[in-house]
Image (cartoon, helix red, strand yellow):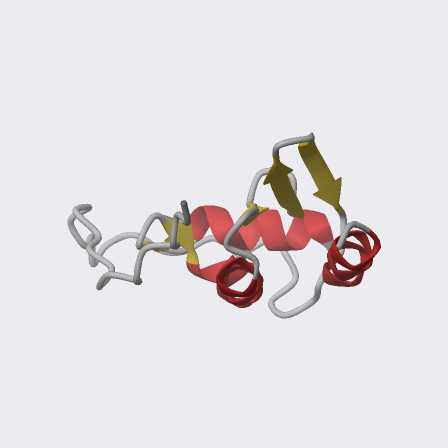
Length: 108
C-alpha cells in the first residue's frame, strides 16, 4: 500500500498584517544551506500541504523515490532534515539524498 505525499495547497496566513511593525533583521543567512539557517528560515515560511516551503525540493525527491518503490515508505523529515525509509525490517535514517540512494541500492 502506498501513501502519496499530498499535493501542495495555497498558503494561508491567518495573522493580520500590521503596517506599524518594523521587521527586525533576520539572524539566518538568506540563501545558504547550513542546517541551522534552513531551520530558521523554515520557521517563518508558510506551509504548503503540511510541508514547509524551505524543504520543497527534498519532499519532491522523496516523493519521486516513493513512487518508484511502492513497497517502502520514503519521506523527508523536516525536524531532522534527513530522509527516512520505513520497511518491514524497520526504519532507516539517511542524512543526504545520496545516502538514501545508497541504502536503497544495497537493499534491493
